Image (cartoon, rainbow, N blue to C red; front, side, top):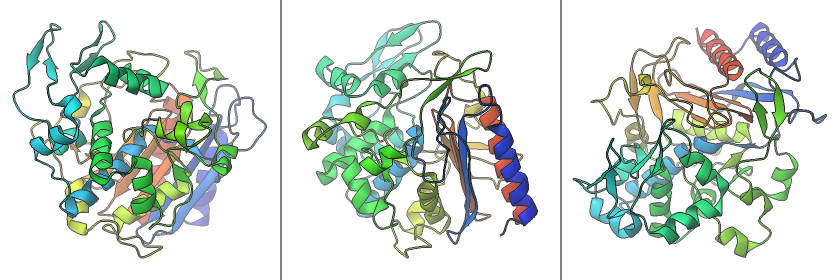
Length: 403
């Protein structure tokens, strides 16, 4: 695999053009493509760190990656499954580790609550098939759960992202509870576990739930797009991890396995390269997960729901997400352990893993063809048409280079 100078030039122009209109284009964007050997085939930053900023977007820029965190939490869980410390299908284990969710009831369409028919397993948490008795819709805002009030409020109060995520239609918090399973099994915070067992072995220094001073110096600014396309600055959703002053404050923050990480895109793509390489880093040689476990992460866990992504997501909170008619227009859709699986019109293989982050970040990982990549912005609402178009351009160029 290799990008020709012409392909690099075309992509560079496309990224620059996307940011040319400082008011109604993209404020700034980073794109990265890697191969199975971990080498970058394309890495480019265009535009500014945020709307109205004079600071350029660079490859050193740090992004809140939001739900792109889920895949990392999945890796952590599968490491513990591989070691025999967690089980994917032991409901008693999960409900012992997380007694707060043991007696949750299931929310019905009419608003009533009924007892659940089976226990909650790690597999259910990682596949979002456990919905935390949560239903928030565009027409009826309902939050129903039997988690005691103090626990619920500690989550909601720790970071505004919990409120915002719970207010986004279809967003589930199962992966956050999976992260808590990791914490209570290992007696470490999830961020500490990530650092010791994933980031450090891969040589990654710019991914964290609590950005270092150097990371915050390079943080991309958050932006909002109005219905008429106009950009403006907006407050950062994941605020508290950016202002914690000491260890006591950090220990009081929820480590969100579903949305908590900040990262440099090039470093996130080294995790993707490790998945391409069956769990072994092609750059450091460290094995963080065995091939069998990686294979399992990429197996479709919901074969009975082949069209789940085509049911659409309404814009229940319009400042956070646009309406999404189809999560990805592939012929085949599935869900692995923390991410979606699909082929697609860009040239993907069936079973390619991919997912996204709320402020319009998107990654994909095609193990069959040995290519992965990521596009990153900090623009809300989610499913920004301009970002989606540039993502397709980037991904299509990668597969054209393969051909």
